[in-house]
Length: 421
Image 1 (tube, rainbow, N blue to C red):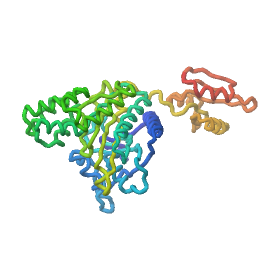
Image 2: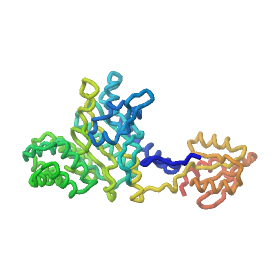
Image 3: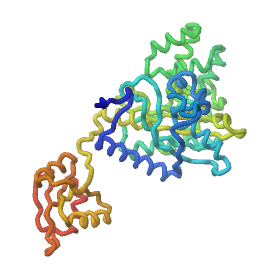
Image 4: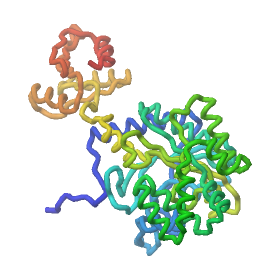
């Protein structure tokens, strides 16, 4: 007998948990479509040279890479952004730009599993390609806000910065060092804390004065304070200012915050970057991140295809909501009605289907009591267990209230479908 085991960092998803997850996906998809984004799909496997070297050395170490039966060097995608850049180059002539698109599927990273972090997980990506307008940056940020509000998640903050700001600040302070290395260290701030960030900065050879200057910069949380520090003539700051003007115009200041410590560790980011945190579980990391990447597609095609996008980490979001006790799978129902195993069952099932009401037929020869218990285990609120063809009436049991409704019409059943009590 083979031992039923699963790889570390990978998980099975039981019916109630997966139903909850798919409900979130349906809401996210609907939000994307309502805002003009169309679905695309890319393969899980790519040639290794398509993926490697795009996100940085640390990301390359996390890529699942192997030789296939044809001795081809291939890898599992670690995100959707790099495959999207390849997609836009390969299908350039068949696409209409600006392209607003989304992908919702699994990605794989060989990182250390921990709370909210897995080696296989679902990302909900949304991107705008072919526009360098600040309006495309803001639409991506606005779409994050809309998604979380439509998911009934209200305790979130979207932290925004611009990747070029720190580089410009380092120049004004005459701090000569590897900018990318500093960016990657700062990207770990919320994960490892300020003391370890300081230690890592010192290890790059920076002086105490330089380290303190960097820490002063990332402590800025107000756009006006940043203007005083760098100067309004800075083009990156001007872009950020335009974004925050739009945020104020829409009265969304409660959901967005300037955070100069946000840098995003992936090398392909070039402009505005952002991360989203749920209040009370910030230690679990960002549940939606992204930014602008203007040079990624040019690796695959001799054209500039500007890009900006974000990604909701669905599994981490669910883990965070679970930690906050804001989601439970206990009351997830598999259907609105269970119909017992009788010859008229499929006729009723067909009627309910035509009225867009989810229904289940018990498949088996167990007793009526067993079928009631089955409905209770699956949180199905009502069981239709008897039908009189002569009267065209049904008998139903309300599982939660443990009440029987006799001689009821089909119209009454339709009304019950909206009864959540």
